[in-house]
Structure formats: structure tokens, C-alpha cells
Image (cartoon, rainbow over all chains, first blue to last red; front, side, top):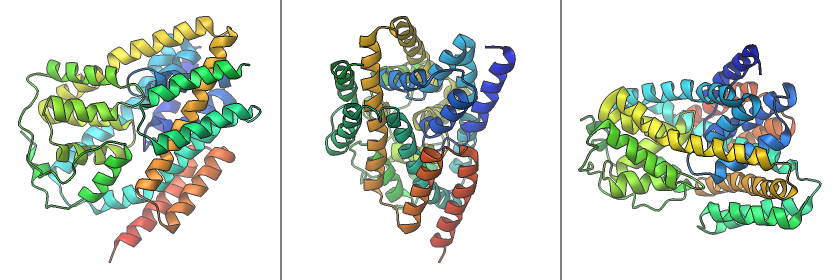
Length: 175
Length: 217
């Protein structure tokens, strides 16, 4: 990956940072559109693996962004992607936190939260769809996704077990 | 210490919504706790770093439940009430909720230095682990078994994300305009693959404006 491309990656993720209301995963569809479909820096399978690995490893799930950067451009890519996605939102968070510590009446925060909630949820659904849609040719994997939804909603089981079960199901289903 | 503004809020203000958001993160707390401020505080920024490092490393499949356990129950730096209030703000803001929360808690005790130590504590070790895993994976990715396992894990990841969305919907069902906004977002981003910036600016401002109007007497 050239320096110009690293810069493009950094700037694009900078621009996504402030849109990631509800977590970086909500901008995953846009990341996919840019880094996979438009730039071709990494493949579909690498993109999905980045998300799966970050979710199965300990730590914040936002590290999937680090992995996307790493897959696209090694350590420099990982740094560019992580710094890009974290810097603007972290700065804003600190400023907003200090601001709200001084003020109690926040009608616009309520409107923002109420208004953005359905958009955030719509983005989560879109992300899940984009990840699952790669398996449309394989109904068994779609069944795994659907079963995961049911178990997550109906039980309090640690998702780690679901991810482990998913790995076994994947092996059982095969190529 | 600057913890008083939170503790002194009029009872009930914001708390319902905060509690709803909080439950959506699938944690159990007693949200009726009196908003008594927490008793203890971190001894140093290094103490912050270590606590956030600990909770991040325990956080398989989601760090948030561990954050509550570590910060409220074990360290006692925040009451449940204070934790809910901070989390509500962290969720409204862009960026990872848990990262925002770390910044806020660190800032509250040691200013900018504390914020940086808290977020480094949360990220340093997991970042190395996740890249090590990716390296292992790239060495083995041509093995059909590994590729199949990862495909299965990816299918679960997709289910976890949709399942989280379902939980959020159930914990605070949107009204009619909200459903329309949700469906439009899914259609434009998920199916049509339009660039997110324009969807967020267009639909987002429309949705916030509608909420603003509804919220006025």
C-alpha cells in the first residue's frame, strides 16, 4: 500500500468516525463499499473475517477496524484505520462530556437520541444483512445466522459460546 | 472532584431513557438505586489503565457487561446510577460506546491524562491479541478447515448484530416515524448500498427534526 493510499484510508475513516453513532460497526457497510468494492484493498472474505475475529477476541469490537486496516496495508494500515476511526469521535466525546458536566438542560440531546435511535438500528440491520448475504448460496449458514439471532434474543448465554459453536458449524457444513 | 453534577440531577430526569439504553446492553442492574455518589476513586492514572486493561481482556463477546462489573462492583468508582448516566451519553455520541465511556471516566478523575490512560488500557493488549490472531489466520487461511470455521463464525457475527438490533427494538420500540426511518436506512444502506454519509445527513437530520418537533409541547 502506497503512502497516498494510506492517506486515503486514513482520511476516509476520519470522515466516517463522526457518523458512527452506535459504534463503528454501524459504518461497516460504508467501509465495505469503499475498501472492498471501490478500492479493492481487501477481499470480501478478509472483510468478514476481520469482523468475526474482532468479535471473537477479547476487547472492544471496534478493533475490527484495526484488522481491516491491517489486511489492507499491514501495520501502517492498521494504524491509519484505527487513528482515523478513533480521533474525531474521541475528541467529540471528551468535549461533549465536559460540556454536559456543566449543563443540565439538554433538549437537543433528547431529540438527537430519539431521532438517531431508529437510524442506528437500521444500520445494524444493514450490517448484519451485508455479512449474511455473502452466504445466500449456502442455506445452512443462513440458518446458523438465524439461530444466532433467536438464541441471543431469547437467552442470556455468553456470545462467546455462540461464536465457538459457529466455528464448529462452519467446519461441519464445510466448503 | 467533578462528580456532583450527575448526582444532583432532579430525580427521574433522563434516567428512564438511560435505563432503557442500559438494559439494551443486556445487563441487570437496579436502576432505582438512589443516586448516591460512589465512594472510591482510582489512586492514579496507572490504576485506571490497569482496571480498563483488565475489563477489556475479560470482554469476550462484548466489553460492556464487564465494564459495569469492574468499575461499579469491584472498584466502586461509580454508582450504578452514575454508570447509567455516562453510558447514555456515550451511546448518543459517535464512536465505540465503550471507548467513549473509558474517555469520560478517565477524564472525570484525572482530566485528559486520565482519559488517555483509560482508553490505552482498554486498547493496548486487545489490539496486539487481535492482530496476532489475524496473523495466525492469514497463515492458515488457505486451509479449508480454518476458512470453513471462519465462515461459520462470520455467520454467527451477522446473527449477533441483527440479534442486538432486535433487542434494542424490543427494549424501546420505535413509533411509526421511527419504523419508517429504520426501514429506509436498511433499504438505502443494506440493499441499495448508497454511501452512508448522504443517508445519515439526509435521513438523520429529518429524523432528529421530527423528534424535536414531537418533543415540543
